[in-house]
Amino acid sequence: MQIKVSIAICRGTAESDALPLLMLEVDAQPSIETLGLGLADAKAVLTQLQAQIVTRQVELMSTSQRRCDGCGLNRAIKDYHDVHYRSLFGSVS
Image (cartoon, rainbow, N blue to C red; front, side, top):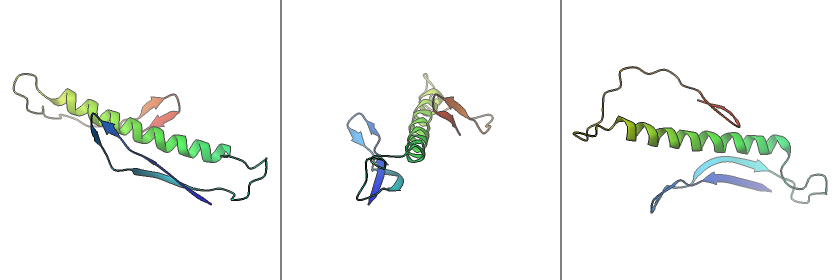
């Protein structure tokens, strides 16, 4: 059996299309030992979910902080480095 895991981002009343995270193969006839997600599958889901959430939050933060309060235009970006954010569930680029 295949399970598709996706996420939809809601901002106010607008909702994004579902973003696919990953597809899992699970036993269609599980025994008590194979019921639910295994640890590796759960970690994979959590890693993808965290990456999408942090990415969207950083996009919102960067657009709101770039806007000039006086004129409303975006401020110029003077420098950019590949940034890694550390979270409870690991680092996200």
